[in-house]
Amino acid sequence: MKRLLYIAITAACLSFGCASNPDVQKLSATERAAAASAALSDPDRWDDPERGDNLALTSPTQAAEHLGFTPLIPTLSSPVWRMIVSTAEDPPYRNFYLVFHFPPSASFPVDGRVQIIERAPGVITQDELRAMATGVPNSSLIDVAGHEAVLNVGPTNSGLEMIVEGVVVEVTGPALTANAAKDIATAFARSATAPTTG
Image 1: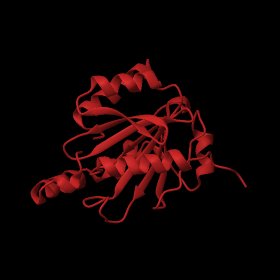
Image 2: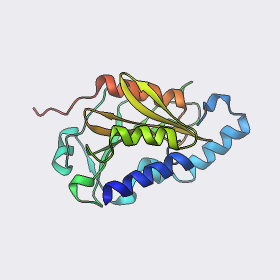
Image 3: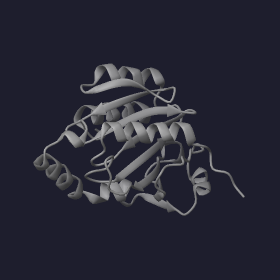
Image 4: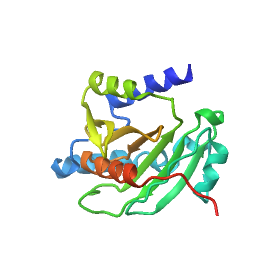
């Protein structure tokens, strides 16, 4: 039941822009300001996922203890700002969040906050991802470092979802461009490994 609910919520988010942007660089100054204002109006969503129902971690090796799966840790150009495990659900249904604060750049002209959300294997299948890509407006199936991924382009941000080593991975942010989402997802797919102890 929880798996079906997750699929329905994901499809709705892809449709209505929960994780969704054409390139922000193409927006007018007024549109960029509106996007930045919308992102800043709800800062907790991006810096404190799960609204307090979470456990902040100091090391990626701690994550597997609290999840029903072993998360993947990527090597990106910006260090992880925060690692969080959701605690509102039982371990098999918990999410693992990597929160990043990328510095302002051409890739992040409005807001550099990015979340990589990892969900347990089997929460959604590759066939279900493909179905979302064809059944949700502004969504398309793309290749990301040899992985099929769903890219959703919305009015203020873009989001991407794929499966890497069985783990369902979502890349999102309050003003994430399609190109930045693809770049981060590519770096994730190429570099992510399970955390090691010792």
